[in-house]
Length: 383
Ligand code: PMP
Ligand code: GLN
Image (cartoon, rainbow, N blue to C red; front, side):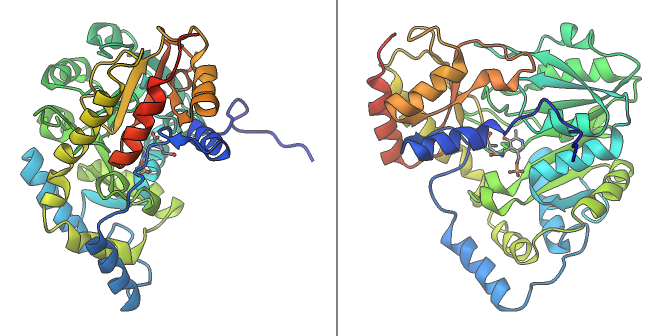
């Protein structure tokens, strides 16, 4: 039988590859982004409660009303904008599904979608499956800034969508007000949509505030913003998230959402709705993760890696050019196998595998693991 692949050039995601290698070699896994600690027992008890008490059938397609209402309050409080919980917020099976469904709801064959590389790896295949054309804009170490004039030159009459991600995975950089002002000018008088991936909204450091696209009235009407409970609740395995957009956009989103997933896990939605009543559960995350970032950086500061502290996400990128001139994919493998610390090479997030000799560490780990990783990293010898 002959199979004609729809994604002939695509291999297995780097997260599966590097976590597999870490397990195989018993390395500390700072590659794939997930905490090595559990979520709050209070949250787990709430899930058990709802499972045991019969909340086990389909949820409404749009999400549990008490949860979407809770999220509407959260958004209004944090970003000073009122979204209608019934018509403008939808629970999804992770941010990945929200991204996939959004792209499929809006991108027609031949439409161009601008993405910022290094780009989270689910954007490109989703665009290609929709028949869209990926138009990459590349940001680079060490400042990872977008030059909006150069970015604007990528816009054509065929540009349907721009995908942004702040705080940015993998670089740890963030968009600030100036970025949104520039973007606003670029897209004024166009029909360009913006998909804003804000899954790390609460992981932002050094007193900075997350700038959400939802706070910008001129951008809001053309934007869909996605979030992940996996990140916010230390429960990446639950694969739950949500999407926020004006009613007209949400109407189109739901046409796809209802047939690629219909609805998401019911007892967990009940549990999360109760749990988020206490806003310290998410407002405390910046401090919580900043301590981890600082501990990790303290442990590697005397190593040959060069870095600028991450502004957001639970990732830290570091330049290894003082250690080796190997390609980053080879270096990441060698770090895992020879030194026992698995990392992610950044080149895989560029369509042309641009290799800046930078790797990504995930610091969403307990102190003992960060300390142990720091010790191993300090033993790395220049080659
Ligand atoms: N976007 C970014 C930038 C991510 O890092 C991730 C990974 N967790 C996702 C989307 C996907 O989130 P989820 O696990 O909720 O699908
Ligand atoms: N978002 C996580 C990361 O960037 C991984 C998600 C996944 O494994 N698909 O590492």
